[in-house]
Length: 292
Image: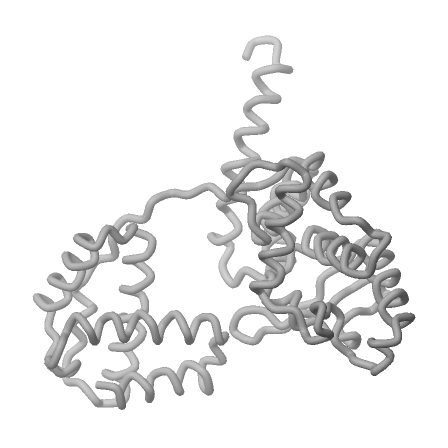
């Protein structure tokens, strides 16, 4: 079974250009499935075995969203195995996906975003860096994984755009605001004035050890300033992405444009934000219409 799983993961990486994050999650899900099967060969799995696996996940108190993701992973695996002629039948075809819980994204108000951006002390280098990170996340709506991989050549300071490598290793060009560019410039200028950073690097955001900052490092930074700005719990770096999309739609941006900016492959991924904007429109209607 290990051989088939590794073969499938190589297929994801090389032929499907899947992100490292996706490949890692699939690997974890598949080894969970292997643990459930014990010594049973993956080729001998049938519909009944899969139903037992779903029941096992339910008993483990996994959410419907997580179960759906694990099932999606198995669909991809068995589709690959069947196409490669490694199995005679695809047992996942008969299996239905559990109904997912609707989860509206958490987002900050415009005032809360300002409080978060202004929380770092920009008189010191790390504070200036943190301000630049928060400004960039909110200004572009990019994912944290996209931000940490930014290099000098990815930002066009004259054209006010930034090139990122998103999910599926797809490149996209995003506009970036003057305020974000301004604070990035200030951070880079201050960083270059420090002796210990005289060694040139093309990496935009560095940690205190002058190495590329990590996803985990970004999460720690955001958590720190959430506390400083006295914002509500549950806010994460991804909340700035949600806020970016929600604020654009609230101010009249069309859904297709927001889809492009976020790098969503399907419009359905972006449509979740319309629930938030619809509630706002209803509130405005109720307040403004004479016969509401």
